[in-house]
Figure 1 (cartoon, helix red, strand yellow):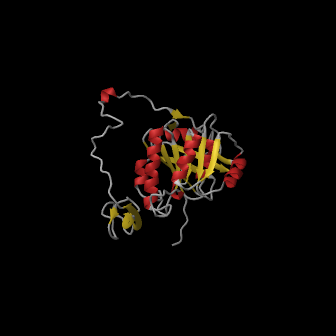
Figure 2 (tube, one colour):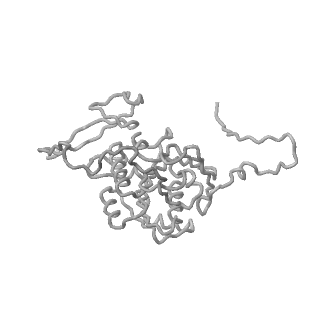
Figure 3 (cartoon, rainbow, N blue to C red):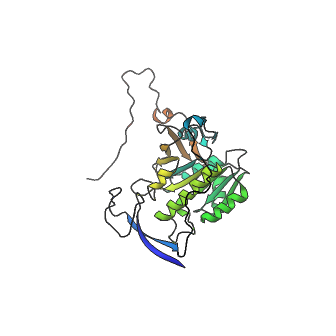
Amino acid sequence: MAKEKSVYVCSNCGQESPKWIGKCPGCGEWNTYVEEIIRKESGPKKVSTGMESVKTRPITLNEIEAADEPRIDMYDEELNRVLGGGLVQGSLVLIGGEPGIGKSTLVLQTVLRIPEKRILYVSGEESARQLKLRADRLGSASGECLIVCETSLEQIYVHIKNTRPDLVIIDSIQTISTEILESSPGSVAQVRECSASILRFAKESHTPVILIGHINKEGSIAGPKVLEHIVDAVLQFEGDQHYMYRILRSIKNRFGSTAELGIYEMRQDGLRQVNNPSELLLSQDHEGMSGVAIASAIEALGLF
């Protein structure tokens, strides 16, 4: 018989507490504890002694062969540069941004351009018809891109087993839930458990996975902070919805530099790569003029 237990979890760092507290002792944030219901199966449990055979054995550094990680060409120069040269096999990449900024458009138009790769696009927010309309608007089509609308983690693994994709896209991680937890999708416990399970799948099967996530009003990835710790790369898609330009920056990257930027222009037919950012900043010809200095500035209007 299952027993229910209530525990309070910090939505910022994931630290647990048996009761609600105002200030988290782990990260120091205020009013971040939310209640989660955990079900535990009662009855005797087999306890492992740790003396059974294991899958791996400890080895020395001299026995490890150091080589460049094989990468998948995303056929997008801006995205490849931000990733550090392409998508690494078995990596888990998180792309975050505000709702409506163009995260799904960026990922969809990118995977539709990759040839000879079987891609599974898991949508938890949009229907298959909506994705079809967006793909037609982007003007791209790929016969190897499979679309499935699913929010159950267990069913997603069934689809992966049946299709054996080379790349998995999950849009978004806040909509995925697992049956082992009673909490609703998007909660701290669900995001943490689903992300950890997807990470194990990516490392064991060497299948790269791209997660799409939302950000909260403070500008950080929605969900527990542990989500950003377990993934291999965190990419932030930024920009103003009232303007046409978008910036893709790397906040964390285990396989490349975090000093790279990708610039896109939002158009009716999708995102256009801006290979030469100077064309956006230098719209006038100042050749032959002396005493001209170029600078970039942000103008903000406020009420005082």
